[in-house]
Image (cartoon, rainbow, N blue to C red; front, side, top):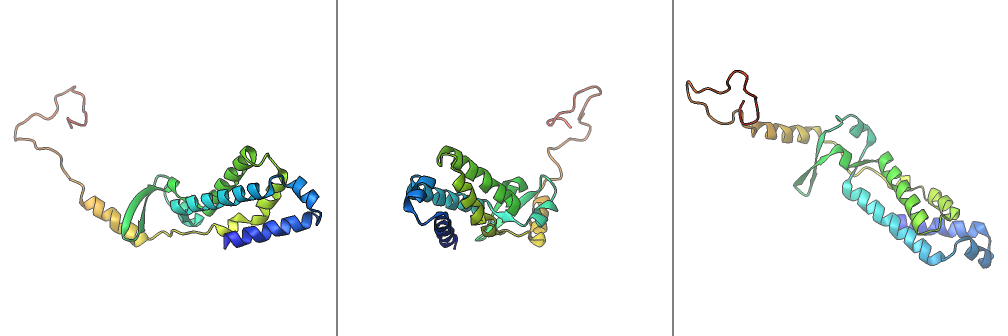
Length: 173
């Protein structure tokens, strides 16, 4: 869907400039190479975003700052920090920053590409592919809590644990 949209917007952009091919080539130097570079770049970045995952902003905002997310895919669970996934807004910001870097490094800061990028409405192609499942989250957290040992080590009757004034460490507590 994105590739068809990309080609349509590109054609519209060229048609609105002028029918004169000489002016088009002046406005978009290395037209085919640059547009292929831009299209491949955007597709690669969208794939990266969806690989990381996109949560609805409302759901992510409701979670504590350092909340551990468990992403379940094909019965395989992976733990992630909430900072390791995107919201729609953070994904769009990432795309915008990535585009600006590409513009600077490979598209000679050509302002025509800025208008084209804006017309693509990339935000319409960034939709959540993750959802927060409270029941599964509680189940995983409870399972981890049940597996925590309540004691560590053993103390014999009458054995001194800590002497007065002695430093308490992980080994001595």
